[in-house]
Image (cartoon, rainbow, N blue to C red; front, side, top):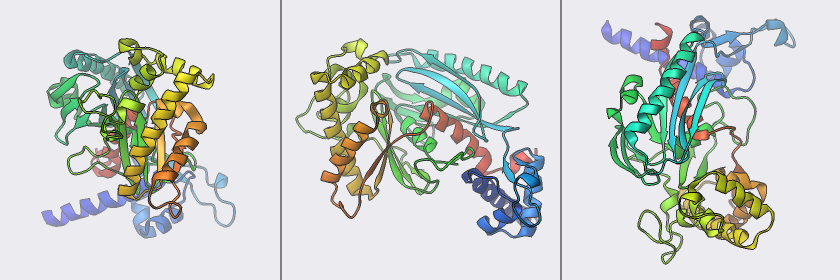
Length: 406
């Protein structure tokens, strides 16, 4: 009997998750009949699952008259933000912060502390981050919401068992993230910031899809995160592929020139040494040393580039060529055709994206059969922070039954 019960729960969990995922990926409300057709579940099964989700305030029903256009009115169903939300945490080179994101995509609360983080003390940072998280939890409680899970985005190599191997641009190495009270208290799922940001690009991944966007929920693409460091996330058919050890996508330390400039990692010619934020700012003569790590330096860099400053234009040109070399190698290996550019280089707009696309066309082996696309991220806000919150929400979406039966 126990085995039968477990199997029934597994099946119900699977079916509930299928319904939630289908609603999340639809930019429009759906009727029960639409859901049954799209998911392959029977109408009888749907008549059991939908009331469970509505009662749990995970799904809401709309007015039939506003949805049906002919025949018998159907009740439209959509994701509800009345209960479940995800808590996102991030530590980055330019600060740290939290966000609470409803499963309907609404921002419940957000707080970011902007400061240079290079050489910071991990215990102090996580203590302050815990204070922000407690403040966010208070807001969630006051609004009658429930945190389904918590994600943490870090600018470094993070293992599946919550070990931070290295975050060079913070000066952090070999840190057991579980030792921080914040992580153990909230059962935090930590990961690399580029992977988290990559998740945020996927429409309907863990929050209600709003429009068509630049990619579809099941598309494949390479997300390139550009900051002081440069990261990458390979998204294959709507899922991030992080590799056997969770370290896939480290584009920043792909060598584009064996005798190139010295990188912070100790090697020569890394992509980061050409196209990273600090490298670009210093190469353009905007600032140096600590001044080059300040986010305000990017504003000046962009202003000089728009004004046609020769040294700045040359620095950006070198960065584009270096990016073209590294990304074309990734395309040749991975066989994908779409690149989404995020971070500071996204601010340079379509001109930079078009020039990078030209670089890729000249270097990928499958051109013109495969024509690469370079797109600018359409995610508003901090994508890694948003992705971390969505990692938290997936704890409910993937296994909804324990939350619903509470």
